[in-house]
Every structure is written in C-alpha cells, then in structure tokens.
Image (cartoon, rainbow, N blue to C red):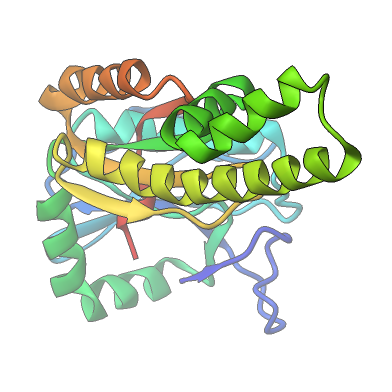
Length: 253
C-alpha cells in the first residue's frame, strides 16, 4: 500500500483502484450496508480479509483530493469501525493497486499488525498542544528570577529607565521566556504521561511549545482530562489545547 493525496495515481503510472481506511481483525463485523466512503458519489466500504486481518477498503475515486467531504468520510469510516474493536488507521489518501495487493501486504506484515492491534485494544489518542499566555509567562519568569524582577522594578521606578536599561531588560526577558518554553515543553509531557499508556512527540510546529500525543485507555479518558485540568491550574502560564479521543494515528507505523 502506498500513501498519496494527489489523486488515484500512485506516481508509478499505475492507477490505484483501492482506497484503504484502516486495518482491523478479520473477526470484525463488516461495515453496515450503506456505509459511505470517499468520493462523490460516496464509494461503499467493504472488508478485504487475509488470515487474521482485514482491511477497510472502498474503490478509489479518480479525482481524490483532501476535500472536507472526503476527509470527514475517511474519519467517519474509522470512527464507525472503532466502535467494534481496535483499528490501525491509515492516513488519508492511502491507495493500493487492487484488493489482491492489499491481501499481500496483510500477509507480509501480519505479525506486526496483530501486535499493534493488541497494543491498541480499547485505547484512543489524545493530542495536547501547549502555548504560553504572554502575561502569564512574563509574571512567571519575573517571579522565578529575583535579579530580573529587581531590574524590572528599578526600570519602573526610573520611569522606564534609559534606552540601554530597557534593551537589557528586554533581552533578559526574552532569554528567560525561551528557557521557560523548553522547561514547560518537558513539563507537559512529564505531567501527563503517568495518565497514559504510551507517549508520542508530534512534529515541531511554529507557535507551539509542545505538541504531544498520548495513548489512553477508553476508561481512563476522564482521568487524563482531569490531569490536563490540574496542569492548567498548577501552571497558569500554559494554554493547553486538547483534541481527542482520536483514532491512534500517532501510534501506528
């Protein structure tokens, strides 16, 4: 199976006919009749099985693009399948030349897929992104550094201080905030990993000081969110954005 979001051509000159949503166990129930996949009109979803594994598949539209309708259809198929058991979600745009090629991949990687399905049984992904509240982090770095706080007070007493004093204070504050960003990035992970089963750092993204995904058992979701709330209360300089539970994309190779 290959991954592409540029249409139904895999790039090798061979038109891909099968769109793959995810991999599950062969014992999983077939998608209900009328389950709508990607495409306009939506392609019906079916199971392609081999041994102990099955792939959720539909025919691939010739003009596949990451449109909102198709992105939601992809997520909807995975969400529906996930109600019946663990699913290894494929990224949007995962294509194969035909069902026989999918069966071959299931056969070749059966041990790995079955191990991951076992590891993901009854679990979902929560993604946590963190930024700093500007006023909150400034208050925190001044509270943590007596010398920096004294310099800030001296400038304030001197009606803002000289240009050089302002420049020096600004440079020191920027350096202190950068150090705090690095510390808080580690803090987010350390504070929440105890409430999860696995942790996967996300790609670096401009604007976030932390982007981390956590694998959490379905029954532990409320406890995980409570840990997030506790972190917010303990570290008011942090702005935390939580998205989940999601299909465990970050925990599937």
